[in-house]
Image 1 (cartoon, rainbow, N blue to C red):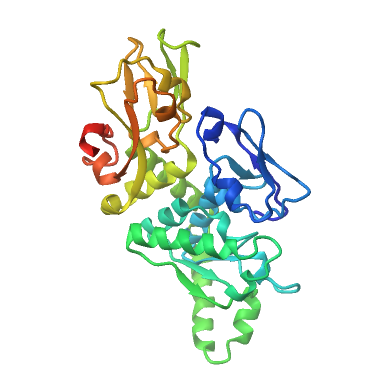
Image 2: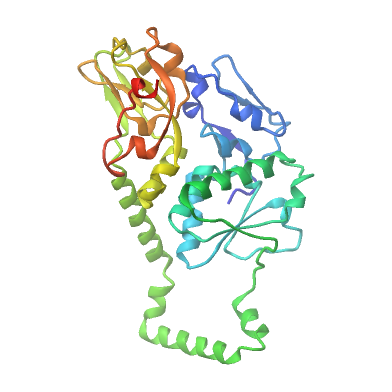
Length: 359
C-alpha cells in the first residue's frame, strides 16, 4: 500500500509553524534529511531521503504520496473483516521472487506505523502479527537501527494501553492460489471435497454472492467507522468570532489523536492507561487576551462569538505553543490520562484541566 511512495509534508499539522519548538521528526530521521524553513515548516532533502517513512510514525505533518495513516488503517481493517490475520512486514524482509499472501501488508519500514494506529487496531481486537527477522534491521539501508527501536517502542506503548498483544513471526505467509491449495493438500482431501460441495451449494442458493461481496463488507466497515465517529461527538470546522484578528479559527482533529480517540471509543477501559500531554489554564491569572487561540495548531483553544476562551482537551497535542505565547504565564503543559479528561464517556465533553490541580 505504500509501495513506490514519496514522503510529503503537511504544514497545517506542523506545530512549529504555530510557534512550538518541536524537532521530533528531525531527530528521528535516520538519513538526517529533514530541516526547517524560516516559517518553521519541515523541508525534506529529496536526495538524502530514503523513503523509510519514519517521520510518518512520529508526526502528523508527514504523509505518503500513496497512503495516509488513516488510509493504512482502513486497508488493515478490510483485511481483518475478511476474517484473516493482519500481517505487517517491511521491504527488507521480502526477497525477489517471493510473493506475500494477500493478508500481508509490506511497508518501507514498520516504524512508519504510529503508536496510535497500533493502539486502535488492538483496541478493536484486530489480530495483528509482525512478520520479520529483526537481524535485517541492523544494516537496513532505509532506517538503519532506529527503525527497530521506534517500531518496537510503538508496539510496547500500544500493548500497555490496551492490554492486548501484537504477535510476532519470523516467517511471512506466501501467496498460494486456491487451485494450488487444494492440489497440495495431501492429507485433507475430504475437507477440500466438502469445501467444493459447500461452494456449489452457495452458488445455487445465492449465498456465495453475499459471503464474498466486497461491496457488502465495505458497507459494514463504513457503518462501523461512522458509528465510531458519531460516538466521539467531535466539532470540527470553522469557528467565527469578532474577538479574533481574522474573524475566524479552524478546529481540526490531528490524525494520530483521532485514532487514539477511536481506540477509546472502541474500548473505553483503556482510559486510565492512555497518557497524554495537554495544556492547562490558570483561570485566575487568565485575562482572555486570546493570544493562545491565535497560536493553537489544532483549534483546541477557540474563542467564542462573545470573545471568551473555550478549550477542548481532546484536540490538544501538547505542543506548548500556547504556553510560550501567554503573557500572564497562565498556561502550562501537564501530564493527564483519558480518565482525567474524558470521565463520562467517548461522546461527552472533555474536562478542562485546571492548572491549580497540577501544582
